[in-house]
Length: 339
Length: 144
Image (tube, rainbow over the protein chains, first blue to last red):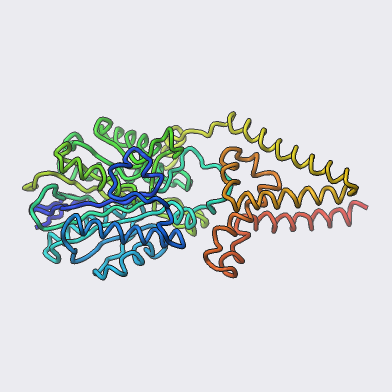
């Protein structure tokens, strides 16, 4: 059974497996360093639809179909979310699939939340298989949070580039590695950052808090993990995260990377501080990390999707940007927790 | 850690924009737009328009050209390269009106395009008119 340990962590002693993972990527992501690893790369970011929003929903639907095919199961439930208002990207994407769906939102940390909820649902016996998925689309995010695409302005060096794509994982009670062995729900943090063009800075303290709480709660050292992978802090956020953790005496410089850094080639793709968006952590997990876990190149990872919680209204009204992070431990062995 | 010391950390970790490169590009492209404007004015003057007419001809031509380039997806590329160089001239204003029109057309001609077309240029129009009223009143009462 799942057990709540420490302040923020839940651990699983029974196998809760990730039996498959699927990823879809946009054209720019397809040209990036991970291009060949995605299950599907769009040839056109409109995905044959009339609007960017509909294109995102089409990706959600296609990506879930790929996941069902790869895992060979139709899940009992779906936990999914995206960045569009009222989770429209997800809702229009799953409506034809006809599977009960929990629409969830935690900005770009949604994949962490989806995995955590899916794992508890499976572990608790409420379902045998649960799909956890997210999506984001550069153009629908720009429209909602920033400026019209054709506005001739320059993006600051600290800004990140929203990933167009979708990522999903099938969480199951089948006993097949890798397993979700624990997760830590970070607290929402507020360091007064109000620059919407510097999301990495807004999220880094949340990631630091979450990672530090996870290690404390599980009584693990940072080097226990082969890789600690944050969601979309980008280059600026990574630097801040390493510093914040160092102040607490935790050094992850050697085993940390960030999905926002992995997904684009900074030099040739002009993406400034890196990739962001819900799909950033999920697509990188499905395309790269999951495969490396399966091959045994990685055995223990801590995936930490990070989210910047704000809306255009909260920004206009002068509120600072909140940070959130969820740490999910994914390992090739089941852990007999004894804490 | 308090917010102020974190803010210092963020400032140190955040790379600055390449100021010199941006300035040179802005100067070159902004200057080029002005040269084109001057050529249009001279052209109009040569064809017999008076100074006022030539100025109007120049503005209208630049606005239409920038609007067309926006619709063709080219002005955003110019803007990315030139920054303030293509934002400050009248062409930038044209782009700031046309780009929401392109973006929000999908939401319908009335509540989409119609209500959101001035989402960026709106403040400039509002406060520009307001300022001109104030300046006009000062001129009317004190300037004569």
